[in-house]
Amino acid sequence: MPTSRRSRRHQPGHRPLDETRARGGARVENGPDGEWTVRTVRSGEKSYTCPGCRQTIPPGVEHVVAWANDGMFGSDAALDARRHWHSSCWAARLRRR
Image 1: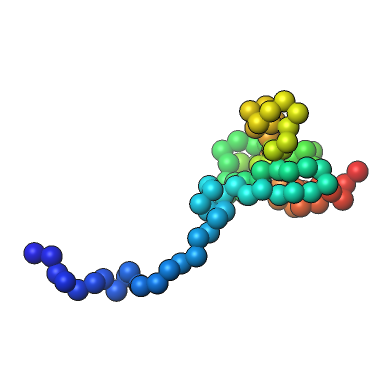
Image 2: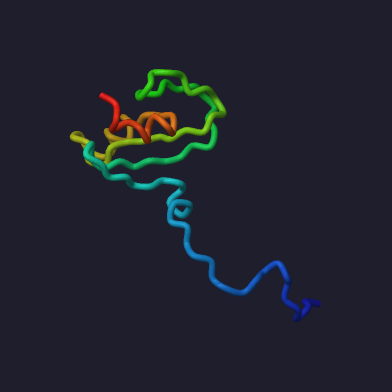
């Protein structure tokens, strides 16, 4: 028979919604270079070349994937043109020439 006691693990109250987590980790960033969708990747199974520093991002390293929201050829083409960046290179992309 079920018990009428509540578990202590379930605390009453409301936790605020984590919008980034609800969107699967994707967020939108605006800058002088346009509007971008950026997703943090905790680890990957492949190696990628960062377009910021042109160095390899080895498998298992946390990084970001970014694609333009205002792509000239539509959203599908922009998603296909996404790039994997080191997190620090993505943050510094506007300071580079």
